[in-house]
Image 1 (cartoon, rainbow, N blue to C red):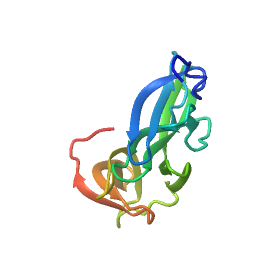
Image 2 (tube, helix red, strand yellow):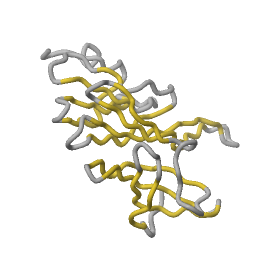
Image 3 (cartoon, rainbow, N blue to C red):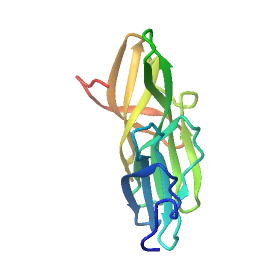
Length: 184
C-alpha cells in the first residue's frame, strides 16, 4: 500500500487532495479531491474503508457537478456534502465566464456505500413566505441535526442568509440563526 500513486489508489489523473476526513465509526477515510493543475475540474469525493487499498467514488455526479463541503457525522457512518452545478458561458467580449448554482445536499452511508438522501430544489421544503432558497454550505452535522448556511428570499431582488437545520428525510429547512450582513 505504501509508495503508490494517487491513480493506483483510485484517485483519477489530474486530481490532488484538498481535504482529508476520517469517520471513526465507519473506519473510513474520505478524500475531497480537486484539480491538481490550472484547468478546471469538478471537486470529487472518494472514500475507502480502513482495510481497503483503493478509494471508491462517492455517488455518480454529472461532469459539471462538484461535491463540496463534506462533513462526517461524529457517531454514525454518514457523510453529508453539498453539490454545485457549474456553467461556462461567453460574455459580450468573448471572455469565458464561470458560474455555479446549488444542485443538491446529499447524505451518503459510508458503511453501505450508498446515497441515502438527496435534498434539491424540487424536494426542499422552504419556510412559509419564502419564494426562493438554496443551501450554500454545510456548517455542522451532529446528533442534534444537519445544519447549513442557506440563502432565503421573500422577493426575487433580496436574499437573506441564515443558519438553518435541514431535516433528513423530510427536507424541511428551518431557520435557526439570522446572518445579517452576510454576502455570498
